[in-house]
Amino acid sequence: MNIYVGHLKIHKGYYAGRPNSSLGNPASYKPNKFATVVCSTKQECLEYYDSWLQTQLLNKNSQQSVELDLLIEHLKLNQELTLLCWCVKDKRLFIENPYCHCDIIAKYIMQSINAI
Image (tube, rainbow, N blue to C red; front, side, top):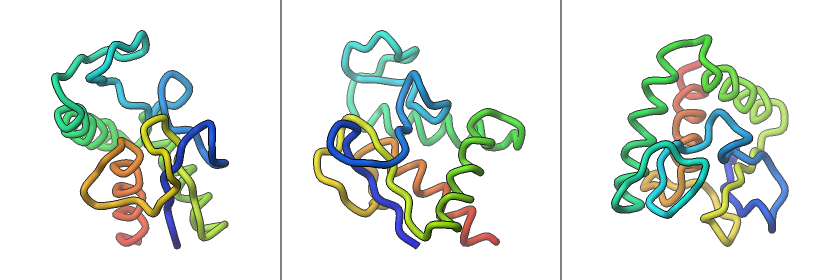
């Protein structure tokens, strides 16, 4: 099974950004009308997002848990999933050292699948 991360306007897949997805990163280091948290750096935003998402996923009925479960089912069924955002220009496999919040989503999907 492969999880890819790509750009919303270039690739086809599942848009995991704000405001459309409950998995969108509420934090931004750039001015953004949809962000509810402002960070100093991209790395700080990714660290915030990882902690925030982990907390949301503790509640199995949260919007984030439900949405993540749908993505897990899609991946199991299709053996491939592409998560889309604005910050990744070239479609690539997700990476453990996150560059985008979609890498963090992919990490939690793979952890869930490996735990089964």
